[in-house]
Length: 133
Image (cartoon, rainbow, N blue to C red; front, side, top):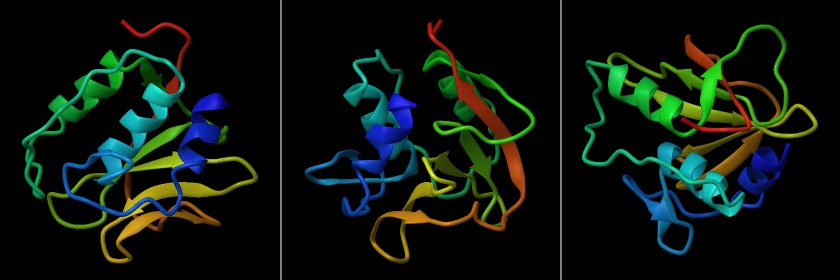
């Protein structure tokens, strides 16, 4: 739940590709990393990725290293979805509280909160566990 709260605090932060600092801007991976850091958790990071992702194994490995594990069933606050907004694209969306979903929206230029999971194919559903590897 704390992870979801920290992600919600970042709503309105400017969007920036490869962004890892709320002061300078965040992308979708940066949103998750910033929220984890704000929880006091150690984090792995991935940089230098392109907008087109042909191999998702690096992103899935990053999620595992940050303490996320595959989840199924209903959504709980703090769950992370990897979705496919377009061909060869992957995007991270975080479940907030009260049924909201948070993500760094390039088109709107900021981190947003919306009332439903974006209508894109789901590639993965992860949940944060107590101890990262």
